[in-house]
Image (cartoon, rainbow, N blue to C red; front, top):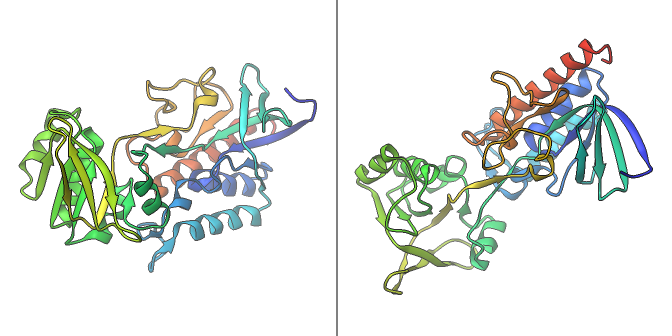
Length: 317
């Protein structure tokens, strides 16, 4: 740990809807929260364009603008928002030690709220990332963005439960859904496979891999290859969805916090409490089911309230 040490009541690791909501509640409870925003300040919403499903924005809002508003509200109540990332933690004692920016500073915190989120897995294609970054029709969230492709033809890549669930969701909105599966079978549960196979407007392309997403500014189609025959073919689509999983950003906590096999943090049912006293979690770092901004904000609130009660019990609030 570094020589520069600072002690705080509440440390929030990561930003985004969960982190900023936790900060608002913690600050209003006089917990003097300090937040380190992490490697992606504002979280996944800063990489999206239009957000239309968050309550209170009847005309929609741009993701980065929304996160800036969250930040401004947190700072209004005197949250100390800092740029930086957590490189090491020590949760062995009642005072939690957190190393920032590879040892430049150590924070000693009575309570810690983890809101580091999760990152979508991508195919790694240049065209995919280019069109994703400029809002050109590549998405990792059908529930978030499917509405924009109502009545259109889209493609979705993946063969697990999430891919099947999102393909089914898209099928209710879109004229046709092309489901791209790399193998000759799915990893999804039987019931989810049957739901997809019964949908009249979902066409499953087996043994198929994506070669390129087509289009300069907007998705105009995609080029695929049958990995058994090496035959390439193109499908004209206006939306391209990737559903090959998410990775929670929790590696730095793995020696201390109970997680599932993927890395999602386990919580005590009905709370934001982890297995370590005084350490709480909100948002996608613990949520592999819903992964929505509104649910992240809700669990961020829970984490702050749990932290406040913990400090009160210790006589530190």
